[in-house]
Image (tube, rainbow, N blue to C red):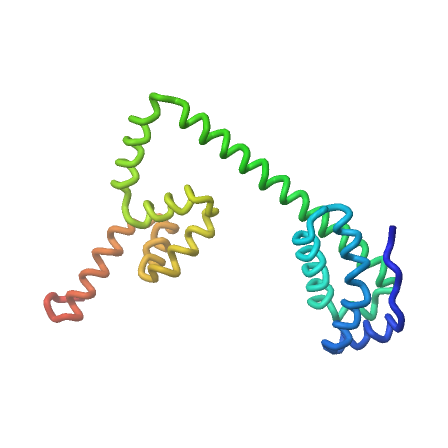
Length: 194
């Protein structure tokens, strides 16, 4: 099962390499049905098929400078399509496994009658955390990765970036807050900043 080359393909690829969007539309239209049939035969989902085909053609556009060097574009496109479809399916399988593990965990947690005091104790402990740690912990509990949670926090609290920077270098963030307070007192004329 392969892809059949479209008419005037070499010329179209050269035009795309020169940023010709209309040539790209011609390439897309020439291959979209063939690629869609192959992916749909594997996924059985119209939505997934459209997403995969769109991602593959986006990759073709993003790497358009390489197109004149490709000898058999139909084979190249087929391999891109195959690899992207496999990666997409593997990602779906992994996500489903994680969802099933989480559902199993929730079910076990709900069935255990003696977990209520532990959950209450955990909530109290979370409430006692400093604001930054509490925010990151809650974001992690919602499924954010550490970097995503940190990024979210940095965008919302620019002053905290300096605290994180200080922590990363083994310094106490409390000292930084105290220094910030002293600085603000000095700016207001209420204190002497040296």
